Image (tube, rainbow, N blue to C red; front, side, top):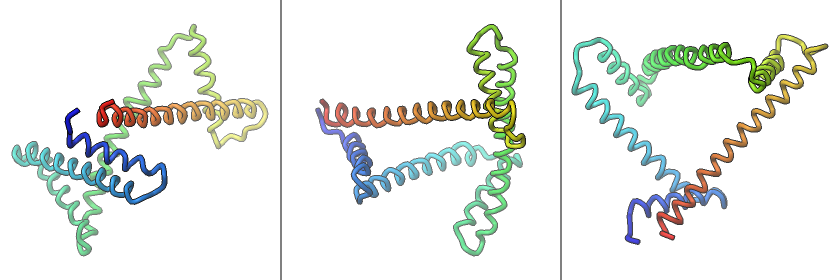
Length: 196
């Protein structure tokens, strides 16, 4: 197998990242700094390239471009001590508008479509009925305004156990996916870099 510099550099950084399994050492810190620095540098260059090609070269007189450029330039005032307070205003405008747009998108895509899909399901399917019963039990378990007494107590306890089961399966599938990434990186080291 011929020597390939990018593959070798990637494998060395990967081995440095895996060295954290021994303990926190200088090799891990160097590999972490190299990886984060290269990713941030690449993203910064791609962001500048996008802004330069898409916005500065095609700048017209519409106010939205001028406002966006002014707000973006005002963010750089956070790099100075004297004018750091100015960066609060463009940050608040950007975060507030993004939150408003994102919230509207979440309501439409997630919440409203879920309500519509529940309204359209067939009640003849036993899995659907079980899912709806478990959902109601979980909702009763999470209501803090009602004291769980009488008939609500066993329902709330069953809802709590259902939440534990769902959270446990979610965490387990997440852990298995992460182990899959580690196995994929080990296969990369053995097959691509060493060539076995």
